[in-house]
Length: 92
Image (cartoon, rainbow, N blue to C red; front, side):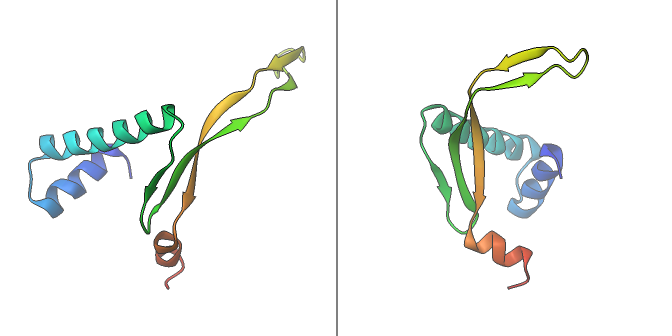
């Protein structure tokens, strides 16, 4: 399922135009992104939690030519599923 599919589902279930559904999805994803940039945790009950984690720097190799290269540390988004989502996936 992609963003367009999600827009269609929201439009059909809420009985709203697709343009408005797409706008709502954009608002939600932007709000989550902005919170993560501020290093805040975003929790959606029974669905999951979005957080930011740090990945340490390391020395890697360029796969094209084998040269050694330093890969800098990075901040990455992390999603941990909630109890409701886990239950739905496991038929509970």
